[in-house]
Length: 80
Image (cartoon, rainbow, N blue to C red; front, side, top):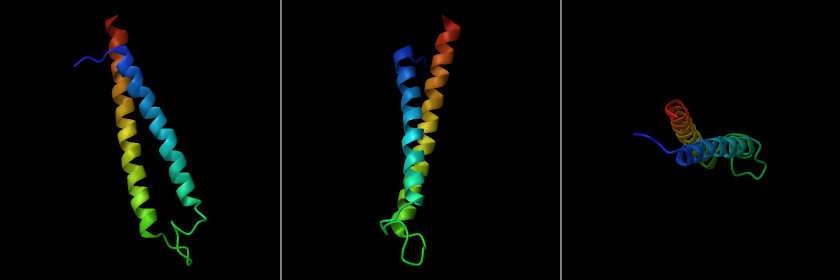
């Protein structure tokens, strides 16, 4: 399957955006002072684990989507 340049750019930019957003989210999750992510003893809560798994999965999907976009751009470049 061949991707058009606009679609490839969109996928690449979506992947980069996703990596930036989820990296920032995980950083903020670890620095949480509201008491949601860590209990009074400093142990992670269910909120922390659920959101960490969400972030890791989203980070992986964003990276995969970005790679697909990059490969589409490289393929378009080779064919032109």
